[in-house]
Structures are given as structure tokens and as C-alpha cells.
Image 1: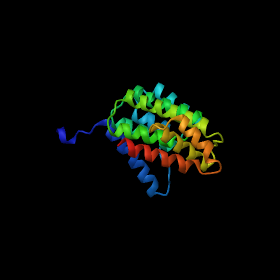
Image 2 (image 1 turned 60 degrees about the vertical axis):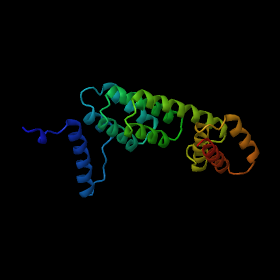
Image 3 (image 1 turned 180 degrees about the vertical axis):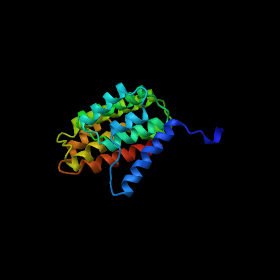
Length: 197
């Protein structure tokens, strides 16, 4: 067989999953592959620990489409099941603590797209998680089911990631009174970013 007809097995598996989704949608069946199916197809040789990690984040409430997206991108980046599981570990903590998973999924996808080593992605996720934990304490009435408190949490965490101190955010929260902390913190974060660039 000539080299132009050789297909990398992982690419073939990913293409098969996408084709199955397309065919299902064309037939009126809108069923995306589950995270478990993605593990089995993308990491067939060593998926035991990874499958346990996926089951943990599913139980914690991470949306399946986010997990499948991460698994697909990790496979395309040729990450091992072990490295992929290491990246998913902080996601489990995020979901178990009731924090929004979207910003963490975005950060993982960004790292994988830039071919950042998995240990560095995990380090960034750990710092992000610390900022979100601190923000959760500052947004005293945080409720993951209410969009306004989720927005405030994300804004406060982003500001802290950009260098706004915990004390400054606390003082803002106190001085905001009935004001919109989300707007105030975002403005402060943008000002800090503008000053530092």
C-alpha cells in the first residue's frame, strides 16, 4: 500500500465518530457520542484509568459534550490516556465544587490547540481553580443555578487571574453596596490589563 493511502488510526476513529454524528443528524437522530464511547474509541489500548476519570466527572455533572470535546482534542494532539486523565482531574474538582466548567474547558482546549504540555495545562488549571475558589468566597451568595451569581463569580475569578488582589475585590464588594459587582470587577480587571500591557 502506498503511503498516500495510509491513515493514522486515531484520525480514522475521530472521523468515524464525526461521520456517525453526521449520519445520525441526517436521519433525524440527534445523538452525539457519549464521553464513555469517546474514551473507548479514542483511547482503546489503555483507557482503564481514563474511563474512571470520565465516570468521575460525569458523576460530578460536567456536561458530556465538554468531555467529548476535550477527549477528541487530546486524541488529535496525541496525548496519552494518562496525560488526558491528568488534564481531566481538575475538571472533576471544579464540577464537584459547583463551579462553572466552561472557563476550564476553554482553557484546556486552548492549551491543547497550542500543543502546550499536559503538565503545564494542569498547572494553569490549578491556578485557575485557586482563583475560582477565592472568588467563590468573595461572592458570598454564589448559587450555580443563578446566572447572575455565576457571572459575578467568573468576573471576580478573571479579575483575580489578571492580578487584582483579593483585598481589592473584597473592598469593591463592600463599597458596591447594591451595585453590580460583576460590572465593577470587570471594569477593574480591564483597567489593570490595560495598565500592564
